[in-house]
Length: 397
Image 1 (cartoon, rainbow, N blue to C red):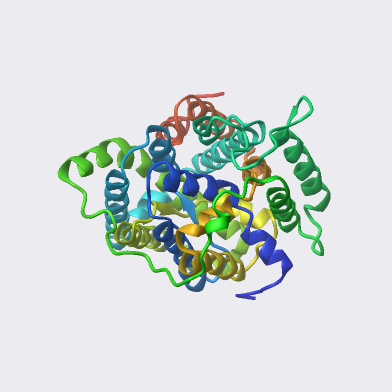
Image 2 (cartoon, rainbow, N blue to C red; image 1 turned 30 degrees about the horizontal axis):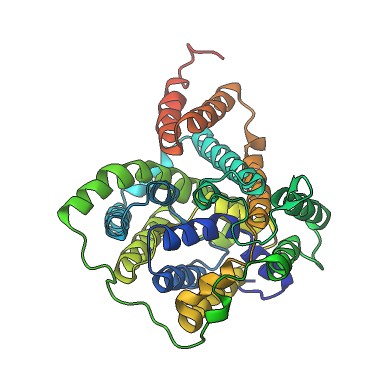
């Protein structure tokens, strides 16, 4: 079935909010990106990719760019420059077909290394959200910046929410009548309504809002130079490893023949066009990703219906709420997003269960260690080199 619209698809559609929302909100509040452009581009990318590929397709922020942008508070012009450059690079790799041989020659152990590393990073980020130690929370100088209550006795409120939602997730993870994802998000919203600061809700106005064209103007030469060296160069290998190869392979693993359109070339072109569009409307750089797919799948998404549901929600917020939509997003405690990340990361990390050969397992574990010590791009590059070296019969592990 190409499309299904039921409670499981709805729950699965929310599975990756833990990755998407914190970076989106951070880039709106800290970097000054246009909320309408960010929400509109996310929603449109969800809908169009679901319609084209015909299976559940994740939409995620480009994490190297997003994380660096938030931590260093770089300007919207530099972010827009990175979106355009990434878009053009991906379009070039896709339309020329160069990405296909690149993807085919990447060893299976490296793909699994990317998936384990990404899954571990997602789990760590989830724990950070729950204990109040993420970069976003440090910048806000509080664990739950949009809750009035920060502690229940000696225990931080985020840990209480995290434990509650974690237990609910474990109990309902495979329950098709009461999907875990919907329950966790529902509990989070109830807590936000009951204990939240409700910042901005009093000024919400429904209307018709459309993204502006080039809201920040055209970036300067300096912006493009900075973006290429600092943002795009480290993002490219991560995108190829996680958002092209690992994602396309995982999609085949989950959906089989239904996923025939999810090729390295098509995925690369999809992301390239999306980022050029983000540049035009002032959105943040976007990609697909194995972690996002694992999150949607773990919480119940099995068809492109999940894309249409979550995409329509983002489009609704952009068109009818505009920048006021951020006030509604603040209702969801960060600890709730942390639980979603924790279980999504574990789902992705478990893909290494089919790695039996000791050499392949060494590559996977080395990539994990290098990624934790530096970043996924470095882990990906060294992983490829190590996998090729270990093909020699003279080397044993």
